[in-house]
Length: 147
Ligand SMILES: [Zn+2]
Image 1: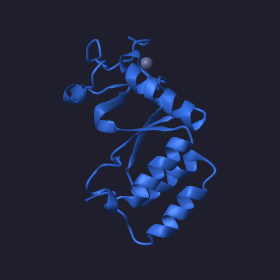
Image 2: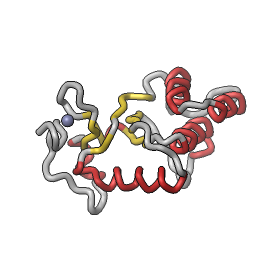
Image 3: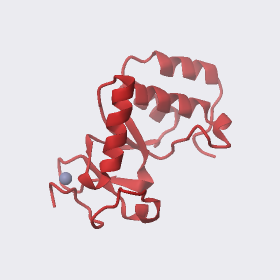
Image 4: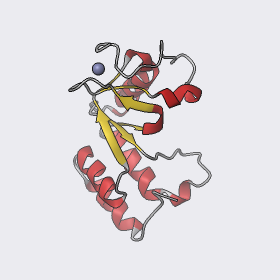
């Protein structure tokens, strides 16, 4: 199992909670779990309006400023049965959320193909994972603006 807790859990959690910048949390996590962080984007394609709405709502609720979307290789959810193996990861996800980051698993998503564009788009493999009211018009490798 990748991304499970490593030794000295308490130390890592304390460090993660003390970082002033989310980017430092992301860097720290990627050094603990090389390859965890895959890519980052600045906004969601209109096809992913539900993701954008969710991010807006969370930031609004936490009174945080929107920073970046992080595409990572693993996230955990509060109701996962094996959540106790992922204390460090779940702490980092909470802290990043508070810092204004939207953290999503890369398998659902991709970054627009156009050079210099960092809009997050649906990955074709997300076909089955699509959630209600968030259906892309069609699968493509570029965002709506670059298409
Ligand atoms: Zn684009």
